[in-house]
Image 1 (cartoon, rainbow, N blue to C red):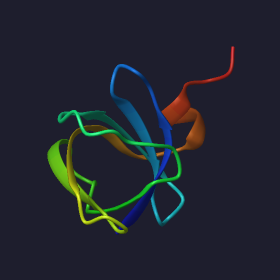
Image 2 (cartoon, one colour; image 1 turned 30 degrees about the vertical axis):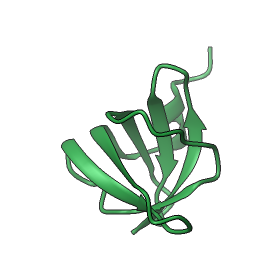
Image 3 (tube, rainbow, N blue to C red; image 1 turned 90 degrees about the horizontal axis):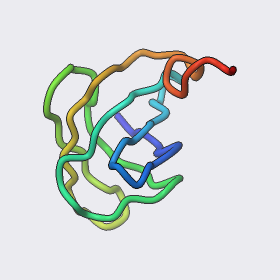
Image 4 (cartoon, rainbow, N blue to C red; image 1 turned 45 degrees about the vertical axis):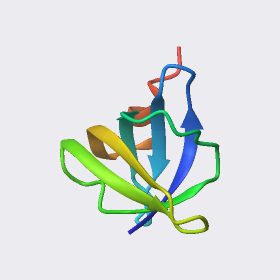
Length: 80
C-alpha cells in the first residue's frame, strides 16, 4: 500500500496518509532523511516495527507504528 508522508518532526515522529484516506502515526527507527510528500510503499497496519520502501529511490525505512486507521484529528491531535 502506498503511504504519503504528511508530516515529519525533528524528533523522528512521522504522520502518513494511507491510500484509504486514514492516517498512520509512527516513530522512525533509522536515521535516513524523510520529507513531506514522500511516497513509501509498505503495509504499515500493524502496531510494532515495520519497513516501507520509497517508490522513487528504492531505499527502505524502518518505523515503529504507534497507531493506524486514524482520522486526521487523531493523527495530528485535536485543535486547541
